[in-house]
Image 1 (cartoon, rainbow, N blue to C red):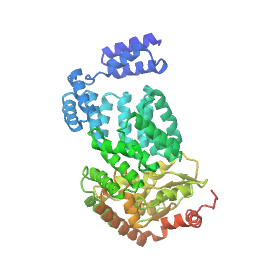
Image 2 (spheres, one colour; image 1 turned 180 degrees about the horizontal axis):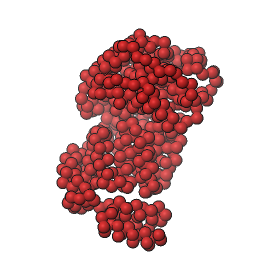
Image 3 (cartoon, rainbow, N blue to C red; image 1 turned 90 degrees about the vertical axis):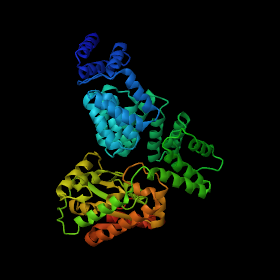
Length: 512
């Protein structure tokens, strides 16, 4: 059809209530002619909140009032209203979308995903909803699923800056920073003053070791939005502060105001800056304040952690068959231990070898084991199923190197499953001085979930005890499979320890 015929067909479909089909036609026009006014106006009309699947229409005034409440940051009130409106207007995507955004803002990403999926059922071709769902999926450790939704969003709106930014965020989570940079450049071309994209590009540059470029992007993001908490924190990680650094005053003023969002991240950034300048008492007070804000948002994690560790030991307290090793396919090397114990350094060393791909902190093993978890106990786990799920996820990375490192530290919980389901895998346990480990955990802001014990010094010590006990349990049962690397020894005698590490991983020495 010609453009005119396509637009008239879309108008006819919209009048008949076939809004999804009308939307697809309008977006097909915009894919070829992004500034076509009739298509833009038609899409705007379709986007107005109204019933698509029965039920009363939602008025513009009610929708705008709900949106204003959300934009002002009154998330609990907005969530209550959005939930009520979703019940009154079950066929309208808008209140489900706002409810999802409120849940995401309150840290309940699983609930956000459920709301976004309901909204997507009602408006399956909405780039905004696809983008929101993708952001929540990345936040819950599913960047691959996020990318699938973002691919669809970008077919409808190739220059959607938020979708491009979130695509890069998902790629960053998969340690595909070079690819992420291309999407971030596109996002910034579409929206030059996009502070969040500048922050994400800074993260990509930082991971690639391009620290000057990273600092420039973080600083640019903060010029646009001085309240952007994660940009303050990210800059603090790569910057050494002098006592007269003006950014210290900016952060202190921000914390003293009512405009700070995610105050915990600003506390962590300011603590790092004050630690750099030697004001250690003030620094500790800010580390404590940041951790307290996070601690107060969650229930005590330790009762559930104790149950989980007991369930793991109970499951492996008897003999389990070990699958035969296979020599085809990718060979995983698990680098595990407590967080902040030196797993990143160990992976960096190995990933410099030409036969090794550094996979980063992969979620694959937890996801492979999760179907066997029921509450805080383990159901009968089939090693063959765990193996299939894990190796399938590794293949999905599409890397050329035969060896892939997985440095998710908390995989130490699943050593029994590695030993039985992946007998060809190498298990590297990295240990560091316990006090250094605990202090490094306490002063680190972990954006991912599952590390709530890190918000409290007593909880860190208690969790360390669970870890030490479980590692002793694994040594009794799978001691010949677990190889130990001492962080301090690696830093003090790097070449000798690297040679030993390569031997443990079955790799030839390489001067790189």
